[in-house]
Length: 566
Image 1 (cartoon, rainbow, N blue to C red):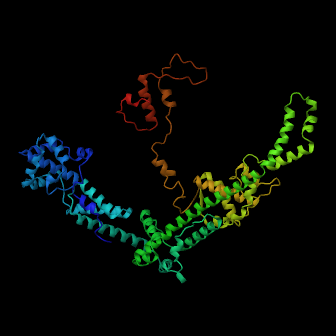
Image 2 (image 1 turned 30 degrees about the vertical axis):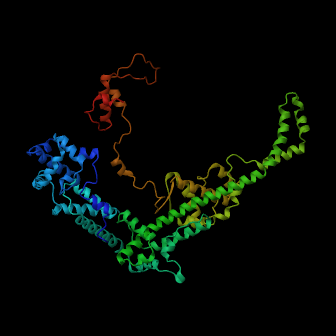
């Protein structure tokens, strides 16, 4: 990699003032405490005192001494002159002309414990710290340079030349990269290397290489595209069979390698060194399995949502076409209902008057029309959904390819998936689990004679899968966006050992029974109930301490009772 990576702005700012320091920086780096004043006031003249103070604050702020102390911003000089009671800050120009500034720099370095960059122990510590950053992270060289500069300032190490630190960062970053490539590629067998190299070969007639084809995810919103996404996932899994894992390498470095392979041309990857090429392709294939599975789930959500939305749109259009017939039937029923609400009609003559207003045949026809057109509460356009069952041809391959797992709330959906997966993936048996189905769907799935509607079962299961994935009750592995949300949480004995306290409540019974309480006379309770207790102030602190000790809680006893009141 090229050694010269610093920008012009970084080279200009390195070891120099980039402008006036802020108020916080003045207070942190240029404030003179008693020890500083003792060193400063030992100088004889005002320009010596001010120059020494400027050198002292500069090395704290920049990590180096300036060749020309007069190049310090005017605000810094004015602040230090005000602290020292020097009326003429311009006397710093006299200090610049003398040789005392070199003696002062050596004195400050000895008094404050500053070390040179050439110190072997200091270079070892910096190199080890930078190597850890390069191994676990993916920071750019310029960022590593800035972080190394900040480390040197905080550790009281005088800054070296920019090129020396630049070469050190480049060398350590290159060592970490070579170790990464070696760690990933050393366990790849010869046959697997040939298989990975085959990803970079272009097809006949200018066809794209397998690498270009695999990293091109789905882009259409259809069931056929979902089926192709499942085929892509199966192809990626065939590539991963037998390949070494990448768990021993920091995930961020693996992701960075895979990201480069996902955007670079196949010819650029082919021109890499073999060790780097194998590591890059291995990281790409291992990461592609998780991203391909996420692509399938993303597209599944879109397709299932579209199926239900299309069914609802068809149902609404059909309902709008029949709204006129529904209105006509409702008008007839309204005429009959008006007779029922008429107080002038005797109760014995209501039936005869209603049929006089609306003939019996018209009344029966209106009832039949309403029964045909109305929809029950919670209706999800089941008829229209069944008409779209041909769009579910992807379902058997989908259930076979995805590696589902479930939290306790999604176990019923996972049981239904396992039941379908055990068969042909689309025809449930009579013993298929129905715990996942809402009540409205159960009436559609289970007929009156006990038989199962297979189409309704598959539709209900797809809706359940979509909802469970959105709630993260269902997850897949490996995955980037849909992994188990409980990963990384402590369980079992590890959680019991790490939890802050083993008791969740205060042990009220023992302290209350063992200590006398003063009840308020104005509060009288019925016999058998717990009376409200008024505790005097002098007993509250002792009672609280007994509760905390019984609960094995730690509490700072030095805090006053006034600050501890709830």
